[in-house]
Image 1 (tube, rainbow, N blue to C red):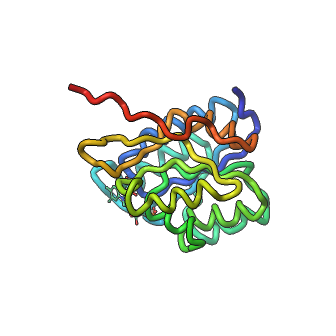
Image 2: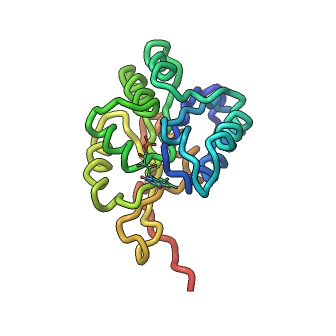
Length: 199
Ligand SMILES: Cc1cc2nc3c(=O)[nH]c(=O)nc-3n(C[C@H](O)[C@H](O)[C@H](O)COP(=O)(O)O)c2cc1C
């Protein structure tokens, strides 16, 4: 598989526990020849948590991609008019951003990037990571899966016993799902079996 010359906007929203997995996926995209531009929601670019500081995350993204991070609505707005990307991947995608995308709300750099990009009829790839994927966010996942030009990185329940409504994408499949989405296809199976529980 090659993504040589493909221009990919990688949108990170505030599921901080998955950032490390997304950084690995970004490294894979770059190795496959993609030109990756990072974009962060305002919360992703400003919240400090036990998973790290915004400064550390931004530094990592610039190192991996060789490009500055888009982190304002005004910097995300030209994405559509200038046809900057072949594909936008929202990875990780929070329950909050899923809800906004499903309802046409555009008040963050993340949602602005997607809105601006989809007007060109180009693909959007969503990698969910939310504790309410089978609860409050379920209808929004369903809505987006039914939208033209929206594709999903295959996902699963990540802790069926401990967090029964939680769903998380398998970020190792992001490059393959991106390649499929660029061809107008959903990587299958979309829904993965839960991992075997460790005894
Ligand atoms: C440490 C931490 C971890 C979080 N993890 C998640 C998560 O995995 N999934 C999620 O949907 N929200 C998570 N949140 C909540 C979101 O960051 C919050 O809903 C925020 O408003 C999302 O904004 P955004 O979608 O614009 O990035 C987390 C928040 C914090 C502080």
